[in-house]
Length: 282
Image (cartoon, rainbow, N blue to C red; front, side):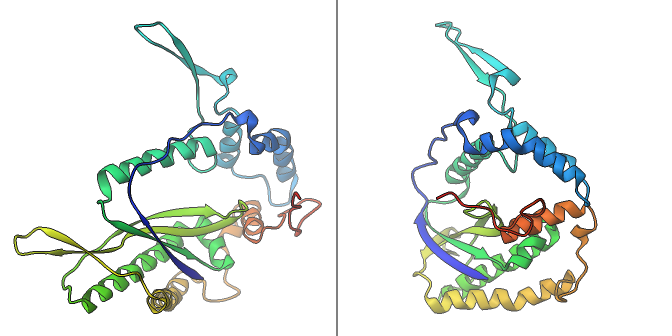
């Protein structure tokens, strides 16, 4: 488990997202060639086929942004110029194009209407592979881990504020849950954007921002120790403190659990390369 703080201002605005044609995407090419073969093999596996919501999202991605699968004709009332806009799949967890557009809209909303114009520091929490596997499908476990992470950060900021003589201070942050690593492996972890300071109430009742100094190595270690100590309570609450605890995901559907486990460990879940790491391009 690790915690990393990174400093950065909130300024400017989100970069414009330029949509890439799916035909030019390496991911699109791989799925176009191998997706139905993959579904056929999973259907023939001992654990049964993958859930329908996974199959629908992957198949919808192959139609995203392609005019042959539907489009809207947009016409200018003045110059009569026309533009064809292909339908998108609006996927929430897989399509890079649709996720990118949603990310841009959320960033714009946060910068313009939510996050004040003050310094912001990003904190990243990663957890061991065994806990990543459980957090990937158990929303309650994921929420409890996030809750104790947010609490540890808040305690750290308010403690450092008290050391400066700032009483009754308040701070806040926003967390984005990322479910994958740089190799597209299953790696559920948190990116929390914390206001890098505290707000205190002044004499006229208004709030005044007080910037705090950068966290020291001791401050980061204290946050990690707070999370580690309280994590034992979360594991005990969800029956994860025993090495031979029952895995509810492996019961229904077991094939999905095998895919989760393989993605966490970056190994093939089934097929002729079962248990082996994927080959890497030079």
